[in-house]
Each structure stands twice: as C-alpha cells, then as structure tokens.
Length: 186
Image (tube, rainbow, N blue to C red; front, side, top):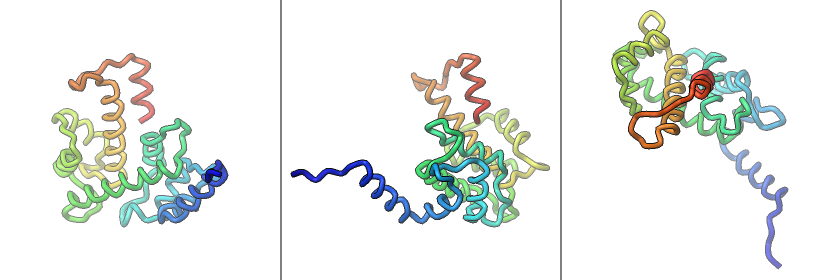
C-alpha cells in the first residue's frame, strides 16, 4: 500500500510550516479568516512589526501600492507568500535607504535618491529623475515612506514594461486601455 497524502494532510503540513516562520506571527495577527490582508491591515501589520524602524509608519497609499505590486491573484489583498516577498523587498529598500541617508535624518536628498535608484539597477534620464523628485520629495527631501512608494512603482512599472518588451530592445507597445490599467494600478 502506497503512502498517500490527501489534501487535508497537505493543508495541515503547510499550515504548521507557515506557523514556524517568524513572519507568520506578524501576518496572522492581522489576517482575516480568509488568510489574506488588506491595505489597512498591512499598514497595521508593518507598523506593529517595526519594519519602518524609526521612520514614520507607511501611509495607506503606500500599502495599497505594495499589495498591487505583488497581487498575483488580483484579489487586492496579500497572502502569506506575497507578504514574505514584500518583507524581503522592504528589508532591501530599508538597507538601501539607510546607506544613502548619511546624516541619519530619516530623509534623503535628490542626489542621494539618484544614487539609491542607480544602486537598485535603474538607469534613468535626468528628466525622469526630475519627475520623480517632483512627485516624492517634500522640500527637496524624500522620507522613507515616499522612497518605498517610489521603489514599488519603479519595480512594478519595470516588471510591466518588461512583460511587453518581448524583444528586449527597450521598446514596448501598449494599447491605450492597457497603458491606463498598468499606470492606474500602480
């Protein structure tokens, strides 16, 4: 007789494995019975976890962007695996931000933002950087929450562009409706 693993056993093992993950405690503290978290629950979870460190908590808008960036099933919520991916990205962005916040003010300046963006592998024109500065800076300084919002948008827009740049030449074709869907969801 072969050993068989039925669906209930699989769910039990998966649940136990997830519960052993240290991140699961943060996630499960705010997740609903459906095992998903919404933008406001994500905001509460990230605030309680302390991932933003001494910086201001993440805004609800930034939390919406983070969910949209990783929302593979288009549910407008985040499951545990998506949450783990986000946690990893946030830790990377926090490290990048901290390395360019040399005066430890909790903000970075325009030239530091450009260096941070370059360090993440993006090569943007001065015009694009000017647009980013206008969008994300407060009096010429970018706080961590806005930096994360910028990083999320850059990652999501780059991912969407790469999906459409099938020849990998730096050119992509978008229908107007497709362009609106991509830019409005990010």
